Image (cartoon, rainbow, N blue to C red):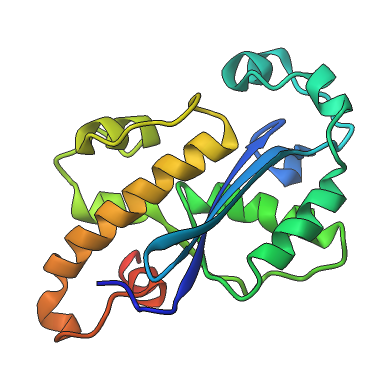
Length: 196
């Protein structure tokens, strides 16, 4: 079903707020790397940026300022993640959010990642599953019977369930697009075009 040697990085950030433009910074990243649809690597780390975590975010994620005080710097973490995911298209749930933090955090270490394609599982889910109650990650996981490993609103747990959703989307999109694909394998590039 998937293009055999295509590497894709499923990315999730936890953050101090809604966006880098408002001064928010990443607090945690989770990444699952797939090759040909199979997991080949995973990475997770807290990230210290010295921007305080608001109480609401701490309650939501369980990530505290005390935890971040002991974490590696955001710059060090992003350098490691950039090396791990080099050349991979990215997949994220609500990709505009994660892409914003991806670009901002990499820019802090002098990396311009503006040409990195991000495929959005929210946009694809809206097209493929109009019968779903909504397109929140937890709702879609329940809708498809996908299990969370760990706590929701933690980066690796969310990246893992997004990976499972991406695989499900791939199965359903392959069937939906079978006439168009004409036997060709599915790829992130094809789904990026389909997401609209």
